[in-house]
Image (cartoon, rainbow, N blue to C red; front, side):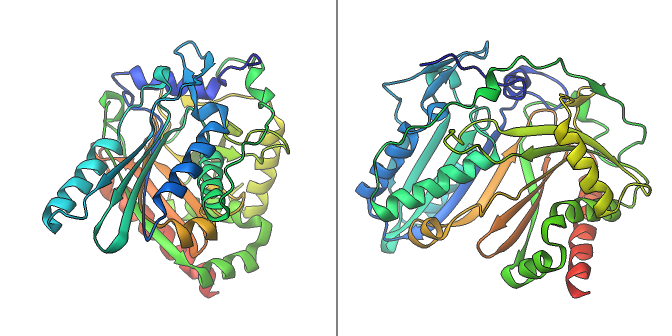
Length: 380
């Protein structure tokens, strides 16, 4: 295997796992549940094995120093449980136990544990899939492509391996992190510096397909900037300091299961809150070679992410494997993670936060204001 190592951002996730303050002590991890029926188990197993084998980052051992070693043996990552003979109350207990234990787990990356799938066979040929991944291995765009590739392989019975180039951006020597100053007090997280090993929850809302199409028709390519501008308006604050992970499209021929994320900070106030101003700032930040991850106190008060590269789950996955019914994620040092996803049936918005953080009522109010303002944009 050619020389390949983790990016600075990926290494920061490894550091965050160990911290006993500043919302550390957790992996950068995402967990999803899908529900479907009449799954061809053997075909699904073959599709899963092909996806995992085809991408270096999800069949490798990731060492603490950032070195990557390909795991040619590959520990088992797909587990099947037949619950169809159990009583309904026992089935629910098992499923909730899986959610509780898997949704916040720290995978053993040095042993090649980076992606997992628990498949439950239920009554009347129904299924639940619990899928999780450590984001040290790939960004949100990569997760999207893993799931869509799984759907494609399953439907088309295509288990052939493909050849990808390694993403060379991860080999570059990047400048050291700069520290950002926050000038205004935020209405949540005043206890965040003392918290670690938290559990996470979220406020969620999905705009239906018709509403989502209206937004795209009105704002087109400015939708990312419009959603960010509206987030500032809904905050009722003079200034918003936001950390933006911008998911870049993978270059043709390169493996998309990687870190293709450009991280930058933006200050939004009344002088630069229009969609046009935000779009210009985003373009400027994307052209800069800066690595600003955290504030001086080691925290990230707000993250805004919106993967605009396609649909999060394609028709092949949704119609033949299952529909998304639950998800939760966590990121070290982050107080509030605002996430937007393009779905087949609409636009999904989630405000993800640590359960132990102070100010959850303020986060909920902000979330509700945000949804209301987006609804007003649609109605105009």
